[in-house]
Image 1 (tube, rainbow, N blue to C red):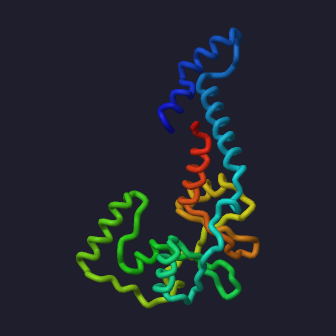
Image 2 (image 1 turned 90 degrees about the vertical axis):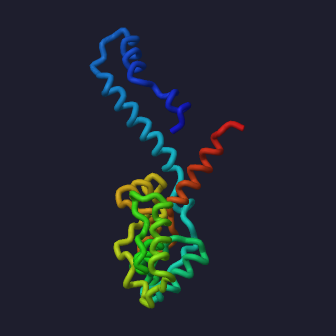
Length: 207
């Protein structure tokens, strides 16, 4: 939040002065009033994000792989399509897992990016590993041996607020959009969320 936005928000002294100006007794404390305002702002923000449905922001068509797909093939697909995760589906196209760039790095024995690390720290770990061990060779194993089986999903009829809550609750960077038959319809990543909010922010700014 910018300093300009902070300056527009009422402070504790403003609430105290507002209560005094009512010229009548109100059985509410300043803390109660501030909490009420905070919750009202949260609901207002949710109303804005609820107007954006998952189906409007998800990336589609979604690229998928099968459990027996070689890990190297999955990695090539991620690189060529510039995506960071692939849903893994069975013969009936039902979701059974997900393979990400972090899973690929772990398969190579390279420390994957950790939540407490910056991108540069992760890159330093990768280059340090290369310096010690030389060229990396991807294991000739199927995706099923490296994928995450407990996939975090959302439904296409849910809204952007739901996606944000699901990501926060599960500490994930992406969610798969599935239908009732658990077929992958698309993906929503943190990059998608940043793009949506950036687009909306720029549209609200004066020329």
